[in-house]
Length: 409
Image: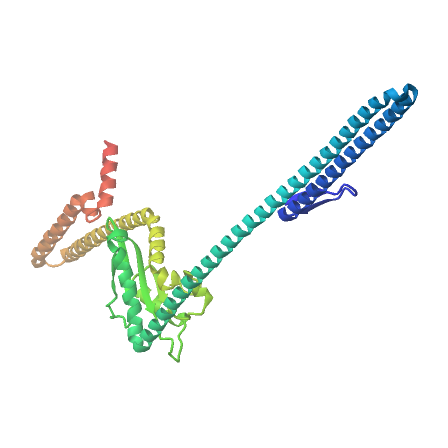
């Protein structure tokens, strides 16, 4: 775009390149005409000046001729001839200037016509190229459209020939093939198999588990749902949430994922991964194309919590060790109390029998000996009681007592 300022009002306005070129051409033509008129006027003025000078000189010559008599007629004739020659030369110069200007104008017009022809040729070539590209794109899109229509007809025929059970199994097979294609590269240590355990009355489709150094950090219960388009009774994804959550809890899985082709026109489920944990905890609904991404997403998130899971397992182990220590302590207390109670009962019984007949003294002696034996055993157990016995089956407490013993030394 070019910006033009009006010389009269001073207003600025913009014109495109073609308009600007037309204005420039008009200005050039007008300038050429003005220059030609100026030169013509200049030549006319020069001629008039020459004519005036010539008239003056002629008048002078006539006066001189009149003054000098007839002898000067020859000089007058020569002067007239010379002036006539100059006048003829002025006419020739004017004609030459006009001819040169006309030729220049014709050359400019010819160049302009050639430029127009050249631009029209380029425009025609570009229009032809655009038409060819448009035709090629139309043919390409038409080919792709036909391929898509053939694919749609194939899948419609495929669905029509399958029973409801086969429709569901085809989705399961699709997901299994997708996972196996990436198993050795992305999930080399993962467990991904069919859930064949129906002891609780129901089962999911697949279970995914993965552990690292003996610590399981991710587990997912998968359910695949598909149906024929011609089925009269259409199911909804929500119809399977409760059963999927039940399977997840019974199989001790952390997450539940429904891979679904149901509700094909629902924009919520068509947008990608849908979190439905507002209804059931840690549950997601995905389309088949998001099957691998949801595994990767949950797995990577679980890897970030692996250190915390290990610490939790360690704390649980310490809690088990503490419970074992308490159980050992209670067992010792129970055994000691029983032995002490037995000894006390027999001792009291022996004291009660002292006042009886002498014939019962032997029995009392035996009872006292037995009570002494029980007391000896109780004392031996008390003396044999050690940290090693109390921390049996509790390795973490054994390490702590050993550390305390080293600190005392």
